[in-house]
Image (cartoon, rainbow, N blue to C red; front, side, top):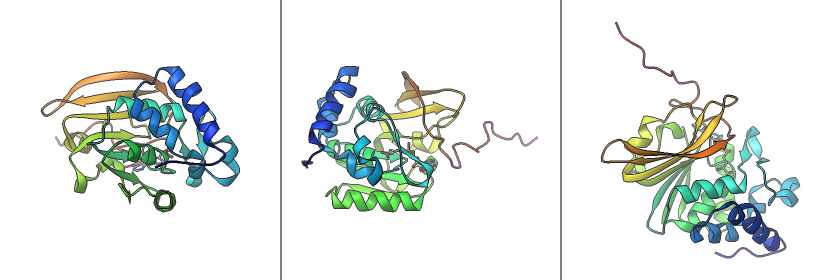
Length: 227
Ligand code: SAM
């Protein structure tokens, strides 16, 4: 899909100055970010800022992530046209659109129904037919479409939700911000071995909104002991 209009030059500059210049090399990611019209995913009043180097507010007190962090996450997930991906934290739907440009199928899950509905609308209007936006608690994953080649997450959790590991293929990648808001977060890539995490890579410090759910913020950090 080709995005057109007055924002095309800003989009090219964003990819060159904020993304390629910071070391993102995967041509699939760079091409996808050249194609997705980010201005469609922000509030009308924020459109002129859509290609700036920072997050922007969206509805429900949430944010659309900084473009570079979206690119870093996608590159780390090692995606191609055969992949099936779970996107946790749909927000505006922008990251889901970037994914949809690269992979075969995307399930994107959002806990706020009004955000999910808004994302569904804009993704449909732009012609993305390989994304399904669902409403629910993403910390439980989305077993109906599992197993996934990758799970990418746009909200920070203090630990890795177990269902995500169960829903990844052998060799699958989980890219997520790990940490508690206000106490430091790191973007991490976990690679799955035959049954457990076989590798963990640190991709640097980040600042994300909290992942709220049964296995996110608010969940007990340690299992209760029965005796
Ligand atoms: N990827 C988004 C985009 O491109 O606009 C940005 C997402 S925003 C930084 C994080 C989102 O995660 C918020 O919309 C928030 O409501 C959502 N979220 C937080 N906890 C969640 C959960 N347990 N399940 C699903 N979504 C969750």
